[in-house]
Length: 237
Image (tube, one colour):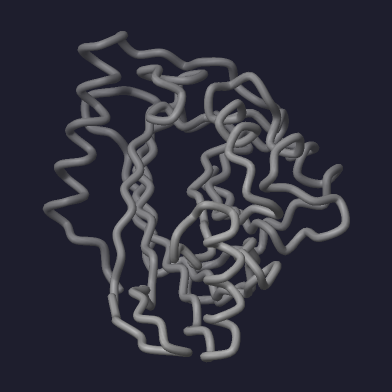
């Protein structure tokens, strides 16, 4: 699957406008090339283009559900007009199988009890992270224009929406969830990772603190020391 060229150029222009107009060129704090945080905490860096990886996330009543995560497109270009910067556009698809009737009933009962209605989807989140420190680098979730010289834009879209009747319930779901990451960064900034993360329990607060830059990734509900299948990462640079 190729990246739409027009979309790439539009995102590229927006990101470079941030670099030039909002703050001016910034090289940020350049990380050493070791990825020590990823290795120390057994975080998987096994996302590759056109290769499926299992990632898990919590579903009410069922515990952890499996999904297939695949990088479906990667495109990198040198920035034109901003010396020393590179821009990457990466698309990742998350495919989650339908539940059978027995599990639909079980999940809906648990979701209703938790006050979540008929929401039985497994949640997955797009992450942009420093592989040396475990800190968030996504500017949209942090509310900043850039973090350590890294500018980013992330979109999420559903593909293959469907209606399912099971165990007397009518529910809606989706076959695929697609994240698109656009990242502009200094060429010599190492250990820049993007990834997909599920959650081990339905607690949004620790994840929010990570996005705000006050908590490291491994101190959130997206990480488990005993189960590294909650996330998978792709090394951008």
